[in-house]
Image (tube, rainbow, N blue to C red):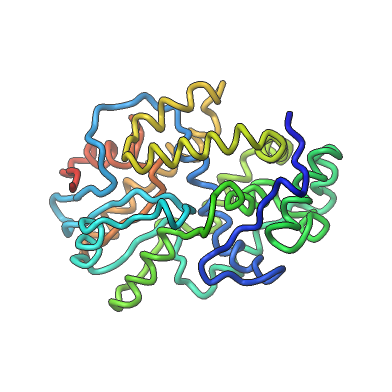
Length: 311
């Protein structure tokens, strides 16, 4: 296990970053969606043959032709890229659909209502002294506030706040960029899920297990950095099968991944056709939801829709 010293953590620079403790508002907005990809691309679902592409066209009866795009929720500006096919697809549609409606003025309040554990359950009880000190040090260096102010936060929320520390340089978000582009074109922004639905999923994972994952993420930093770097490379290569294959060495059970991916994908398969029945949409979700036997693309195909890659 590798102890994280304060000198090892590196402050991150975000696009339009709030400083110090004010950065917490930014993180609260992103907290739930950021961690989904970290789990999402780690699926162990059986791979299915598919072309590598980040953008797919959806066609069929009783729907308006739409597009679905696989995102990486937080990524370095140096690795960020929006192809012309993505821009054209967004421009040609009527609305933007994200996992959550990030344009909802009540989103932050809804998130805050679900960030804390029940009374009596705290991070200083779930983490040992070594892990608590390591997480506290990284948070102070990056968010301007330590664990004392977040002692009642659910461990996965804290984990999501730390994802940016594994990214070199300025950090950006596909969702934020796409949302701004949609707003510039006066497009409506919608969400497939609600905050409450996402939190129900995460609350199914015991807090102690979440805390153990948080500790491993911080204490075994070198392992986490290598994993994240490999994920970025595979994403840039649009290699979804590679993303699935790489996780076989990291997970002994796929329970969490089934919970975080399969059930949600099945729900999306039912909801998305209704959302694009009257108006076309550019749908942007974590790339981990797109591939694999139970990915959203195969599920839409099984439902009878024509889903083809856009290159």
